[in-house]
Image (cartoon, rainbow over all chains, first blue to last red):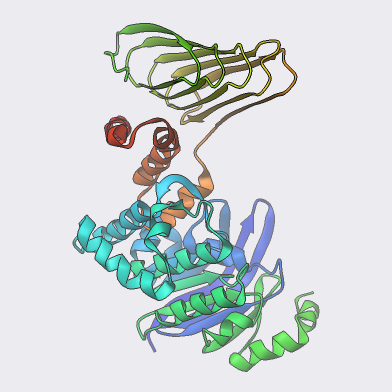
Length: 252
Length: 203
């Protein structure tokens, strides 16, 4: 099996508070892993550390992505190398149209990867192939990035970005939060359509319901900054039934 | 558009009187000169009069840009809106003085004023003085003022999508300013202002 991501003994803090306390995780190429855990376990911190957000300081441990030291890279480099984070709370950017944002993003990444940049017409065609699947109208592309979007629209926009950036490692941070059943189905199908043997996914979620759509190969339980249990998809179903109470003791 | 040379001094003053159901619209983009002051005085002097004042200022080095406005609502049922946004870098200094005066008896006045500035360096400064003088009872007036740095969260969001840091900053600045231009400028002319802002960012 080819390794996609190899996290070893990762410690990270936000401000003075240590959130990740020796996290180990290995993801193979083409695998879908889910990380579940109670609030405050460090799920979002893990996703921000992997995407390179400022203020999330790694104090020890290592993260290798396709054999390269991920932690040395700027956020834009990580995107160029194929790492994508779908945000739990996508950020509003007034005055920048979704279309211009997507084009700047895709062309920056293509440039990084040594591919030719799209002109306006080719880009429109390229985007429309994806917007259809996600039920995104041209109207949404004209609006400013995430400004005034409903919860479902924001999450669909995240999946659209993921689709056009063609990542090799997609991290979905609570992509199911704030979605009703219909939006969940659209997002779930959108993500499932992007599954491939070349693309690994790390699905971070509090609830099992997203995993009905994106079936994981491996499920991990994250509690108090560490992976405390690992199993197959049945582990997620068990968690849904019994909650995280058993793990609070393990962590403490 | 005010784009004098770096040594230029530019002082301008506009007096407008708006009659029944009339409208006075103004948009100014200040980018040049070392010292400039744009002063606009609008009197809404008959019912249904309306004025929309908007502007963008972008300054760096030692530039000083002053936008001073006075809007008088002299009779009932007149409307004004005012929106100025600026970006200041290096040791540039911006001044915004906006006054709205609602005369005694000018009920049904609707006046809104907003001024927002992005400060790109610690040495930049904005001095803002919004002023409402209201002598009538039944009016709607609001003013808002903000000054701050680029939104770090938005910057990270763009960079996480592969957009290099410098380009992401330009996009955020342009986006911030384009909100005013989209509202205050006819679609046909928006491109000119957008280009001027892009060129300024690239310098």
